[in-house]
Image (cartoon, rainbow, N blue to C red; front, top):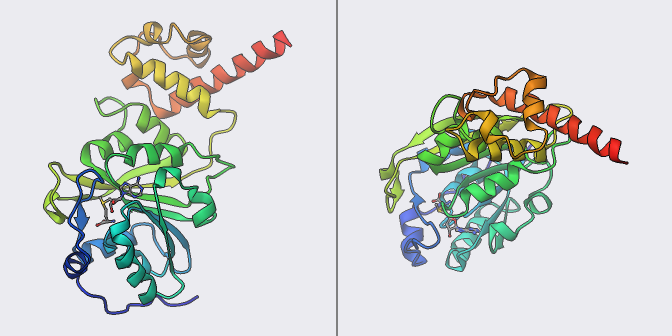
Length: 289
Ligand SMILES: C[S@@+](CC[C@H](N)C(=O)[O-])C[C@H]1O[C@@H](n2cnc3c(N)ncnc32)[C@H](O)[C@@H]1O
């Protein structure tokens, strides 16, 4: 195993000035320049030496350098072509460790580009952050997904929705999607003043590690169930699930009181109901065959 390289690099402020990288609001650019903070973020996934990693939106390369210093083999996709020369300098400073793709992360097949077992680490652009997360969480799980962990900076409100537990306003579809086959936690809160320019709100790094998917549960059943249940979150389940065929029977099978509301139902309970819903629809289609 090679030990991580620590080349001496110019301060990020100089890189930004030298390449004229004034932050663009449209591209969700809020840069992190504190190298100690960046090293702490890159340490969250654990030992990265010789491990594949994937970064969305390297920008001037602050988090990128921290991930490279940690020893990862990194593929980074950046939409802003102005950043490419600065990133090319980083690729030279860490020979063989960094491959930069120019383009839209929403169009990139991260699995093919970064490889099996990659750690995904990013200070995400706020406009596509949730969509990218949902894409990674919805990947095939067999019994684990292709990625090893997700270490992602979000606006605090989104971070709270990802790690929320039942009983509060933050708890909803995103929490169930993130937690039914993963452990999700806030690994670090980051003050808005750490960013250049500072965004209006606070941020947090969410760390998600996958666990084997519960057997006999299909994502599509869980999604239909949580969409219906949280679509009318203030209503009792017997009302909100009325339009989803088989859902009320599934509640009864599992022994969940239909007078409860979605926000009181734990992730494990949703999984149980989705399993019952799946076996019902399997037997219905079997009966029809
Ligand atoms: C919040 S900034 C983070 C920059 C840098 N990683 C840092 O931490 O300082 C988000 C970055 O994502 C890039 N970006 C925005 N939309 C993108 C997309 N659809 N695909 C790839 N990169 C994107 C922006 O150009 C910007 O560099």
